[in-house]
Image (cartoon, rainbow, N blue to C red; front, side):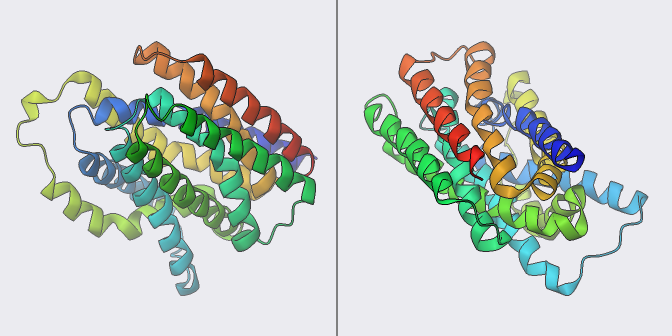
Length: 286
């Protein structure tokens, strides 16, 4: 019981940190290109991870761990940040955070495929209803949003769910912070090239709000959040703890309204409430 509680507590801290990711990315891509934000944040986080790995004298992962680490890199280091960065050029941060409601379903599916978990049938019923509510919201608001932005968000959620599940399974052997650190280092050569080729032409044009958003996603979203999140998934279970992601839309909507001054429509709030109720039911049978 204590171990399960620790897993949920660690997962909750990860969700709280991740809740600021999309609003912070929205701030960053106002002056930086999405590719520079994606690669730059990965380079900074990788350097932080390298320092910690060397300071604590961590052993290198086994050769059999390289493929799972590569999947984690594609899912959460490259795929999710890059696709959401492009999406946020078409939609608002408030609109995008509702799509996070799909993450528990995506993570649970890959938890079955990659983590060997077997939730009860009722879990899938509630999770599917929640996902349908998010899809209905996107269709209902297609006039105010962007089909391109919505599709990019859906693709990012699929890759993120895969990266979460793969990283959680790997964390049971390597540890949570070790997984994200090694995944970042594995992608470092590619990310350095991307960062160098997308460096802003004039640094003077970068405002402090863009810098603050970039700093947040580099240190908190790309490193510290995963330290708590992967540990939570590994200890408390991928499908179960994954349901905590349903708190993320609420927190994200709040941040989008407070920090960015974006309008938060009643349909966004209603859709998020429906999704959370559905996944709360799914959690009972996870």
